[in-house]
Image (cartoon, rainbow, N blue to C red; front, top):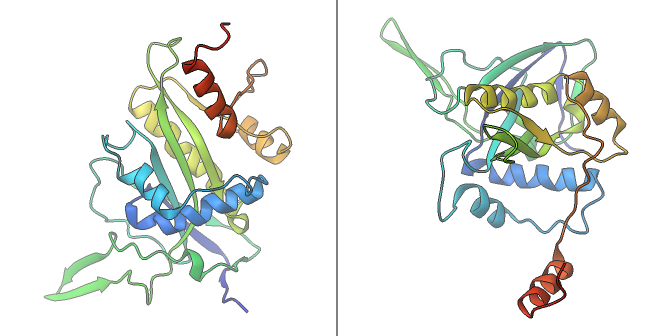
Length: 246
C-alpha cells in the first residue's frame, strides 16, 4: 500500500515559478487534468515536449511575457520566511488550518526535489542548516497553473489567459485554487494588465461556482472553436490549393 502523509491540523502552501526540474511533476499533473476532463484519448504531451515548450523555446522570453507556469507546493512544515527575494516573482505563502486530516496517497509521486529554498544561518559561529534534500524534504507538488499574455485589440493593455489550472483532489477545498488564481491576478495588476480570462467545461458546476465566487463573470455569448488534427491538416492543404472562398 502506498505511503500516505497526514496533514492533521495545519498545511502550509507555497506558489512559486516552475523550473525545468518540475517537468516530471508538471507532466503528471497535466495527465491527471486530462483524465479529470476525459481527454486522455487526445493527450499526447511528453516530458520532452513540456520541457521544449515551457523552458527551451528558440526565442525565449522572460516569465510573464510568454507561457508561464506557477507550481503549488504543500508541506506539513512551515516554509522558510527569510528566503532571498526573487527579482522576477516572490513566492506566495499561505497557512491553512482545518479539522479533518488530509491524506495524500501519491506522496512519493509528487515529492519535490527542489532545493532552492534551503536556509543557512549563523548562530554562535555554528551553521544551522535546514535541508530540503529528498531524504527529509516534506514538500509536495499539489497543483499548477499555466498561463500566457494575450492581447485582444479591444483594450488598451494586454491580459493573461489561463490555459490550465489544476489542484490534486486531496488538496481541493483548502483555498489553494484561489491561491493560484490570486497569484496570476496579482501579477496581472503588477504589470498593469487589464484582465484575466479562462475557460471551463459546462458540466463542472463546482468550478463554475468557485469562479463566480471569486468575482468572475460568464461571457455567455462567446463560443470556443478549435481546428486540430486531420481537420487542421485538411484545411491548411485546401487553403494552399486555392479552395472555396468565404
